[in-house]
Length: 171
Image (cartoon, rainbow, N blue to C red; front, side, top):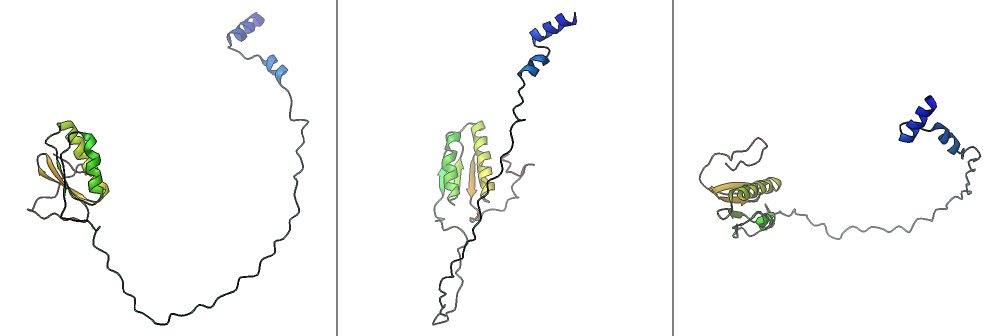
């Protein structure tokens, strides 16, 4: 009975055919020997003589060095502000390029639906956070993005609220 049960299990693939495995096993590695490593003789390298040394001359006159004053921020024309009236979220590229160039940007979201406007404000908040700028709400749907080197003077307002994640809360 065990013979027919075993054959059935083999036929259904529920058991391994040990005899077939033993018949198929070929001992390929017993006859092989590892070859001896073939080393070439090592020849020492002769060093080339050093190049001629040159005498270094001292400067004729000793001049006083002055440190150059670097500008406080990027050299941008602060008389220019870019105003963007996006109609869809795809217009975020224009906003990002202008702000990345160091130009203050005013975003007027009055032509957008609320869902896309929220996405664009989130994008602008991330952009200003990443480039160390600031974002301020001017009106309900108008925001001002200021680069790091630009300071906006105006009426005293409380510090902008930040959400738990540390980003600007547009509400």
